[in-house]
Every structure is written in structure tokens, then in C-alpha cells.
Amino acid sequence: MPQPHRSFINGRYMLHGRPFLLVAGEVHNSGSSTPTAIETALDAAVRLGVETVLAPVAWESIEPEEGRFDFSLIDTLVDSARVRGLHLIPLWFGTWKNGMSTYAPIWVKGDAQRFPRIVNSDGLILEAVTPFSDLARDADALAFAALMRHLAHIDDGETILMVQVENEVGVLSDARDRSPLAEAEWNRPVPTRVRDAIAASGTGRLFDALERGKRLESPDWPSLLGDEAEEAFMTAAYARYIETVARAGRDEFDIPLFVNAWVDANAESDGGDTDFALAGGVRPGEYPSGGPLRHTASIWRALAPSLDFLAPDLYFGSFDTIAEAYRAIDGILFIPEMQCNSAGVEQMFRAVGELRAAGAAPFAFDLMGEDDAHYEEVHDAFALLAALRTVLAQHPEAELRGFTLTAQDPTRELFDGSLEVTSKHMSEIFPSPQNGVGCVARITKDSYVVIGRGFAVRPLNGLGQRGAWAAVEELERADDGFTVGRRLNGDEIGGGEWVRLPIVNQTQSDLFPIRQNLHVSGVLRATTYSATPPTAVVPERTVPNR
Picture 1 (cartoon, one colour):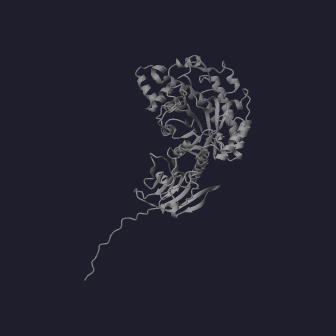
Picture 2 (cartoon, rainbow, N blue to C red):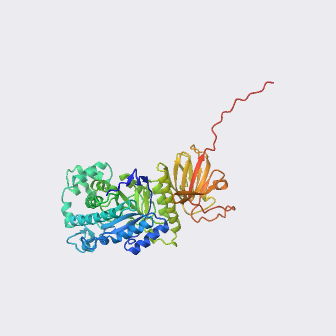
Picture 3 (spheres, helix red, strand yellow):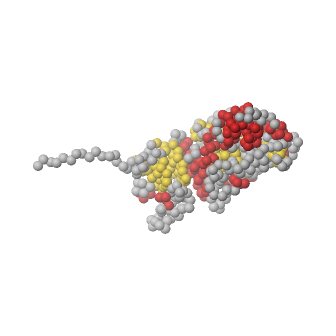
């Protein structure tokens, strides 16, 4: 039965009609491959503070023999998540995972005649089923529909939040498939739906190519789209294939569906030396050609309407540029894979606070031991984001601002000059190699919840002048929201001006002889008032009669 209470509204994930920030992490490839692996991964989620777990579901695990379905591993995954109070986002590793077909069952992989493979320009037959195979598409759709039907049957209304369809699809080692099935399609005219979708986009590489190609009045792929033709050709093939799979599943269980992208390296980089072989590559085939990328999104949205959004896996390049581009496609930003380290912590806060992401999921969190150099920082970040999730659920109309404060950009004014956050004031007393990261939710004109580490926050009066704290409370998470751990005052609020949120494991400063409380929750509730009185009217001075 449809479950409409799991949906997106204005880019936010909604659960039971309330905003629900996805405090998420993705397990490693084999982290959900056996009951033992599932228990280990979900225990790691609880230990680290991950609340929503992205977990692979391999086609080979549910249909080991054609037409015989076994959902025992799915039952273990869902039951194990439920007893731990976790949410799930299953990742359907069906025909493809990272462009290859290694998670398909052996009766698919072992029958290349029935389920033909992609062939590249060197004549190499790839370990990847061609998206032009109707038999493979229909078999995948049948399996995915069976999975979704079973998930609907065991659903409790909130454990399973949404589902990813396939994983990082596209052709590797060539810009397009050159198998016989692909060649037959390549020699046909460009479908009208593809031409119309590109024309309607009004911008981008494909649009520019189409505008040039129109002058030739030729309907074939290379004449119409030039250098962009091969990637556009594969995009249409993958989008059509996945639409059939997604539609079959959604007919059984109506919850949000998405696809993820191995992004190309053509976005503005963050600077420094980038190994493009690892960063995605700059040409189709170096990255999976035909995947749901920014410049091919118009085709995906036209040919795969059963998908709610396209999502980027973000490890390289300009995080903000790529994330903003994906949010612009559907008005939804969710990052299913990203770094699980200190850099990832900064990106999580920036994604949620600045880029209005529904969530961001560090990859392979289950491989992170407590002796890992980044463990405590990542663990703390999940706790702080869980606190933010509670705030947003309690105050759906709150304004949210996120930030990363660096040595080059140490200070920000928020909410039209009502607050200032800075790592500079912090570093004067507590030097730290880490950047300041955080989010501030403005609840009312003069009340805020401040969440983060490695910065100080100061009230302003909206004119860039000093304001003052009316009250500052350090909050601790509780089952029904928060409890007040301490009410801060005096030196702890800088005599009414600064409040500091030190990093995890901040040590006492040798520069400042007075011991400070450095073990703070990272969550403050604060109200302000203006410490600057309005301009007084000076009475006219009168001289007494003599």
C-alpha cells in the first residue's frame, strides 16, 4: 500500500508530516551481505550515532535462482535495524554497481548470450550488462518489484525511508556501448523525447550541442549532438532502463526513490593536485558515461519520472558547486556517499546548514574503529546533527544557517547581522588545527539554538554593533528532546558577549592561566537583547533664574 507520509516538501524529508533530518551513514559494500555482517554494521551505527543506515541489497542475495526469491537476509536487515531504533535506506545493487554487473545473480552473469554485455571500442567485453537488453531490464524490474512488495509487507511505517535504484551506473573504459544491441539503437534517429528534454533545459553542454546540430537538420545522434552524442546516447539508455525498474518497484511500495552518480571531475576543483583517475575523470568512460550527472540531468528527468531525485556521491572536486547543482535539478539534495573523516564532518554541516541538504551520509562508517584518528570527531558530529534533527522537528519554521570557519574565512555574520560566529576569537586562547563548523537555527527574532564546535558566537544588534545575551543554556539530549545541563553566565559568556564552543578534546591553553570548562555538549539555546540603548533625546539645558 502507498505510504505518502514519507515524502519531500521544499527539499526537506518529511516523516509523519514533520521535517526529519537524515543523520545518515552508508555501510561498506559487504556490510550487509550476511546476518553476521549486518549485526556488526548496525552495532557500529549505534555506537557511532548513525540514525539512518544506507545498506546494499544485492540482486544475487534475493534471487539466487531465477524465479525463486529468498528474503531472509532482508528480514534480518529490517528486523535488526528496528530493534535498534534505526532507519534504513536500502540500496538496490541490481544490474549495476559502479558501472559493473558483479552483484547480479550468477544466472544473469553466467549467461552472456541471454543477457548481453557492453562492448568497448577495443572489442573488450565488459563485466557489465548492456542497458539495451530488454530481457535484463525486465528481469531486474521483476526482482526489484518483488523486493519492494516484500518491504511493503514488513513495513512498520518508519523504518524504511526511501530506496536507491542501482548504483553509479554508466559505461567505463569507453564513452558508449558498441555491442550489437547498442549499434542497432545508435543507428536510429534520436528519440523526440530526448530532443525535447534537451531543448527544454535551455542551458548546458547538451543544449549548446543541440543548438549547433539543429542547423544540420539531421536526426541521427552524432550529427545532432556532436561530441556530446555518445554520452547522451548512453544516458537515454540507462534512464529508460532504470525507469522500468523504478516504476515496477514503486507500483508495489510508494516511497521516495533516487539514483546516485559517480560524478565527473569537470566541476571546479577545490585546488591542489587531483588524481582524476580517482576523482572521476574528465571524459565519459573515465567516469561512468550515461550516469545521472549534472549535464545529463535533463534526459534523466524526462525519461525516468518515477525517480524523486538525482544524488551525487561526493569525494572530490568542489563540494559546494556540485552539491548546489544537484539541488537545483529537483529542489532536493541528499548525498548518499562522502568522506568519513574530519573533512567529511565539515561537509556534513555545510551540506545541511548552508546547502539545505536533507542529509549527508559518510561512506564505510562501519569500518571506523574507536582507535581511528577521526573517530571521536565523526562520532561527535553525528550526535550534534541528531540534536539538530530534534530542533528542526520541534521548530519546522526555524531559519537555518550553516558554516565552516577557516583561517582564510574566520568570521561570518548571520541573520542580517544578528549574530556573529568566528574561529578567530576562539584561536586566540585555544589554538586548534581544526576549522570551526556548526549550524544555527533561529527560532524567533531573538532566540537561537547554536550547534557545533571550534568557534565562538557573539550577539549583534542587527546594525553590526554589539548585542547581549539574555540567557544561554547548554542543552543535553533526552528521549523527548533536551534537558538543560547548565545555565551559562559570567566568564562563560564573556561578560555578556562571547560564548565559546571548543572542539572535541580541546586542551587547556598555556596562554590563559585560568582553567576553563572545555567539556561542553556543543548545543546551546540562547536568547539575546540589544545592549545598545536607543539614541536618547537630550533635554534642552535651562539656566536657573538668578
